[in-house]
Length: 296
Image (cartoon, rainbow, N blue to C red; front, top):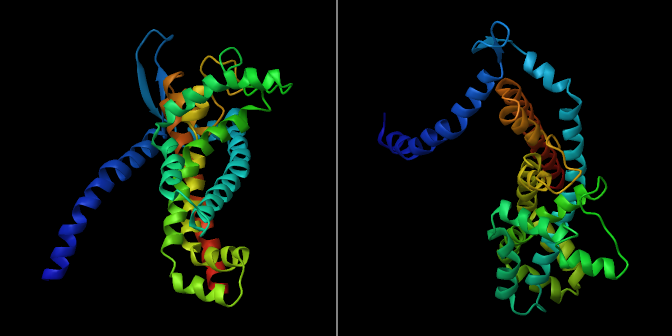
């Protein structure tokens, strides 16, 4: 092996070791676990044994209405959350990048701070703000004649979306703002000299130049949305919420594993969710790649 190849292998070795340990091995174990079912011997008084069941766990998951309804919830969540997140983060970044913006560092820090709060703490804060008996916000809304039940079947999904927006809006705004700051100022100055207004510069020049950042944030947001778990899990605990223990596929797998001790079914549900995320990620990258080729 030549010296450059040895150097490359040495530098890449830590990545591949870490990737194997935290990605390849757990995924392989989940696939293996999904092919077995725990069964009790005798009349139920004996111990349990793992029996090879092939694709039975996958069939059981796909045949379970609760699991399929979880994907319906994810679809509604993505349709509501992703456009709001991308549009909101992009609008804030454009405002901070404009020449009229003042106190940029303060607003960057203020908008980013919610992301520094752990997700479970953020969910607990919002559960407090959603609870009618505790929340000053709900009492103020009721005093103004606006009564909203954040835990109702109609309000549960917007409530979760609101928590996620509060957590991730500032984070993605920073990514967009960094991309906007990397744009060559001479291009913007030339557009201004040519008579382009603020709207024209924002949507005709800035947005096309940060398309790569938009695609990256969109892709990561899709993947993150499919992993929705923490926020609805907190809303499910002791709030009288319409969020059930199988509200999302991740919650379905969690319930199957730790409430029903059906690890094979939980592994199968996790593998199906991972395959869905992989297919959607592939679709997003292919779609954006084709658009880029058309505009090139």
